[in-house]
Image (cartoon, rainbow, N blue to C red; front, side, top):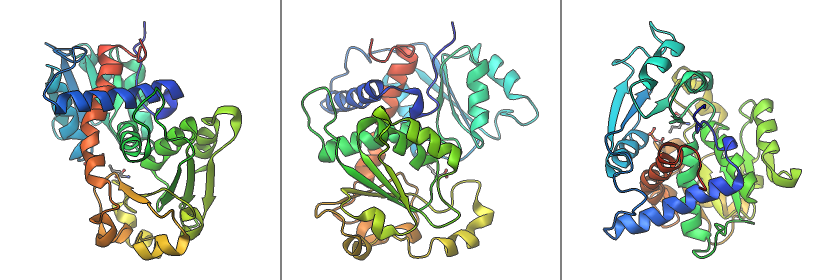
Length: 326
Ligand code: CP
Ligand code: NVA
């Protein structure tokens, strides 16, 4: 039978996504207290996880390697100058060959179709480590972070329903999976991006179709203050994603006025206790130092949570072969 892959949060039910975040949270608590949960102990013993990265990475690489090791497995990092990932060899050939030798592939690519192609031809689970369209591991970590800051610690749910997230900046890969998760969990998601940098319509359809009972919680505007109104969490990302470097000058101009500052949040009327999140790497233009390093900022716990998210994803997709709730 075909393996189950994690290419986007859209691949998960609300309940499966919640379970992954819950597992990340409980494994975090246990491992930080110095105990290895039985479910993780040697769960990847004698198994190799190939990490095929065609773009640079700090968090995703380090968290995935550390996660694999914590479960007794061997992470094999394959950078773009190491293997023939779509260069000089087809993705089909690469996928068939590598998946015949390892237990899972974690891939960071450009076009989303590259990781989708790897998955299509792979005999083992493939986890998307960032494509131009999605970043599911980031979203699991982000909801762990939101859960820790705002949620209830008891019960099966995350206790995040009814919160409002405001995304101010570029409508990109990190936003798309975040917005899909927001829809699934009943979190309002308001997006402010400049004209010409909005959510593409096919992506909007996917995000809207992720809303249960077809009541979309997504709103869009070009005015940052409008999105920020009554928001619990302000989120942004770089204005210039990997692969867009040539557009830098144009983008810096287009996004002028979108920098997240205490003043903008105040003008927009964010909730009193609002918090700030960013997947990192961060640049000065999208958020000033006062917010980024201030006491509203969750960015470093959010980055650490990438480790716990990676463990939960490997458990769900590799150890449990996609039977996340089993
Ligand atoms: N947030 C994130 O994915 O960071 P890296 O690009 O450093 O992996
Ligand atoms: N939007 C960014 C995220 C990096 C983690 C990029 O694609 O480069």
